[in-house]
Image (cartoon, rainbow, N blue to C red; front, side, top):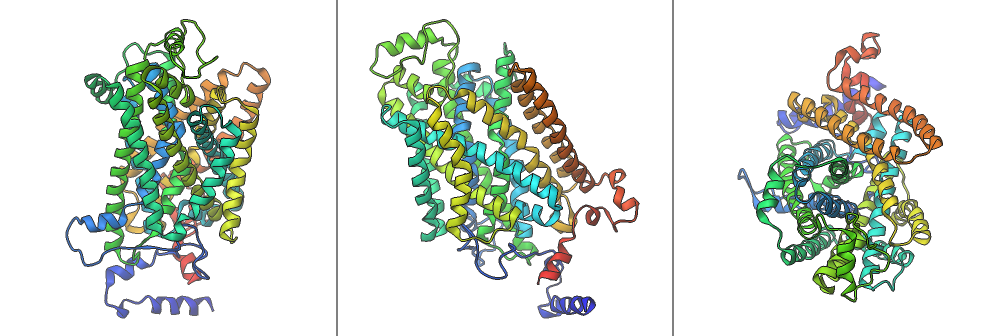
Length: 561
């Protein structure tokens, strides 16, 4: 019976149908675009697919670039969330312009990692969570899902709290933190259903929010007039004169804030929104090219916005003390009670205090425009974070719930702890929570970076588009570097806890954590071609490395067709 099915399938895919040998050779790796495509148009965001112009034969076409424009900009919003903005302003206030080169390097590394995510989605028609669901066994898959959900919850808490802080600033303290969280939850539900009016309208709305951020933080940049020479020196000279542990921790924080684990899963899903003929190798290659160009443009814009924030606080508040700010604020009507004690300690700022000091030094307009920028950052990143949660949950668990039920569940998981924090925490004392959330997200990075390098390196999944030797080595080195930097950040944070019981707990959790990371890394090394680790193949359990490590996508596809 199985042989008969295979024979029918081979006959169905035979080149004699259209005479296109290259197309049919490539179609052998094409899986269904999602596990649910067989039955109904079940999805969020993908109920409409954007058509790609086919009558354009130039090497480069602006019409085609415009058709592919959208997913990269939604992805870039994670580089502009309130956590990133807070990291930017702290970098400027504590190190001046000296760490701009770290921000540039982190953004370039982020672009290379996003390239891998987009290629996986384009080539396979499946996003990273769906591929993990098909390829990892049950226990690792569930653990991986839990880890990614923790990253999404941590990111979402920062984003929603950022919106609530912005509303508090805009209302001069009249809207408390908990009320701002409830408002954010409500309007996020409303905005998320904009895609019912058309995918391009939803993407245009995100473009509008990015424009609001650019104008808001750009206004602050023009107002403060940063030293352009120092800015360029800090951006292109990889050196930090006179820097100590504080600046080192800030540099590590920049990398952790920019490269976010859930964004890899998000981008691999967003690229499915274009109508690409994945049976045509040329069309897939073209899609990869235009998506990379679009992602480069989107991340360049996000980098400029981040530079605006760093430069404003580097120029205006580097080496300032609490006493300096307190004295300036006393001459204004800006509420600042208890924020800046009258001492000579170096100024410490977050997105709330940042708005206040801008108001004290540059007038109320600077405060309100800053708050508008933070609100746009928080609202846009909250929406994309919700999409990430839905893609991850649907992919790992293969949920087949109604659209509203899925949105409600993914929002509830992330919002419940946020609301509790908002009720019991003061808007002026959230720094400790943000530090913990940054550490939480840093710890989850391997659970996105290792799988994406693993799957994009396998010819059984990617065929001709699998990573070459350069990308395997380069990707491995970059991921190792990023994970090492973020682990340093975690160790520094744990060292500040000053509790023997917490140290013991951290040690026990570290053993389990490193064991699972080691498991994923072993699979990744086998995928990269380290044959000495391919124990199963040597024991006769598989035909070759790719099939030993993972189920062959071709076989799964043929069985499902």
